[in-house]
Image 1 (cartoon, one colour):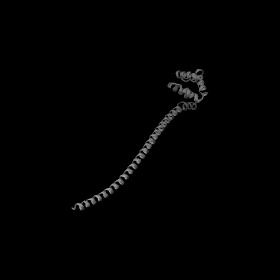
Image 2: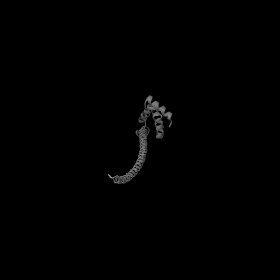
Image 3: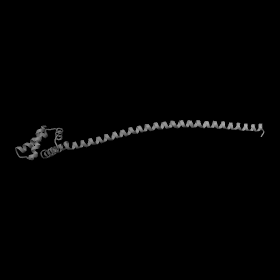
Length: 169
């Protein structure tokens, strides 16, 4: 596409309007139709993106007044609608990527929390087992001491009885 010539024609159409009068008006219309008609839509889109906002507006206005309705609509779809759709798609893709990243980070945090909880649970279970062993040992020790105490109490009673017999009380 001869972009410079298309820009010149757009400037002329904007300043002088679109005319189908023989010579200059019709020649410009036919040249514009020829330049755009021979260009791939991809090239037209690249050209469109290179224009400033007023230039884009003028380009679309000229297309709808000079080209066939289907050709103008194809250019509108390719240049404007495809761009908007792609922009919205990119925004949605970014939001999805951010959501996936957040979900992944949350999963990692949850996995770490579960691991820490499992470790704490194992530590507490080991502590409980150790305390149970200590309690069992304490119970056995208490039982042993009670037996010794009972035996000593019996020996003390026997000694008191012997003392009474020897002293004669």
